[in-house]
Every structure is written in structure tokens, then in C-alpha cells.
Image (cartoon, rainbow, N blue to C red; front, side, top):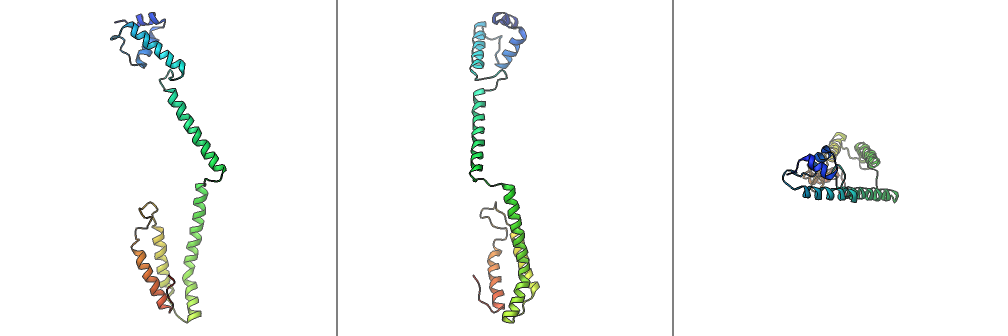
Length: 180
């Protein structure tokens, strides 16, 4: 069982380098012969020289492979962007926000338009507040939409069936057929 100083003399190193080496390769120098230590040290030097490991113990082959994968993914994303196959999420979110806002504005103005048109065309009086109540109900249901739910429904998807019945009642009250 050699000492670290004997190993250092045999490998032409200083004692601190031997100490770092046996710690790094997790070698119990007290339990092996000096020949086994020399062979382990030579194999370690070969790994470092071949570029398969570094002085810090990092597997350089795996690191290079990971770097190549990342570079390839970046190049594929760049290519897809140049081909116009990628969508800028921030721009898309802004555009959808504007579209939803415009839809909400149109829907909120619908009740006044319907009341006027029903009065003008058919002489039927409809309570604007009653229509607003249903429109706000629709908007509330749409605001609860959950795209991550199994069917992409809002929590009140059962109410959708009753919305169809409401539609029929509105059309009947106005003396119209249902538009479905």
C-alpha cells in the first residue's frame, strides 16, 4: 500500500496532484497496488487526450453531442422562421385580443340594433334589457372558456343546450322562425 508521496514520485507528479487525481477518479490508493494506480492514471490521461473527458470530469463527447443537438434545433427554428412556418406568439395574442374586443363590441351593440329592427320591420316590441341579459350571459360563458379542458368547453357547456332554447323563444316572441 503506497503513500501519496510514493505514488507522486512514481508518476513524476507532486503530492497535491496525486491527491486531486485519486479524489477525481475515486480511487482508494491504500487498497490497490502502485501498478494499478499507474494504469488508472495512464487511462485517465488517454481519455483527456482523446477529448472524451475534461480535467473537471465532464464527458466531452456527451457535451459535444448535446451542443450539436441544440445547434440543429436552432437551425431548424431559423429555417422554419424564414419559410414563414412560425407564428410570433406575442403578435398572435395581440391580434386575437383585438379580434375578441371587436367581437365583444359588436355583440354588445346587437341588442339595440335588434330592438330597432324588430320594431321597424315587424312592429314587435322587445325589451332591450332582456336581450342584454342574454348577451351578457353569452359573453360570460365565453369568458369562462377553457381550452385545456378535455373538450375545450366552458364549465357551463350544459348551458349551451339551454341557449339554443333561448334562441328559439326569442325568435318565437318576435314572430320569426329560428335561424338554426
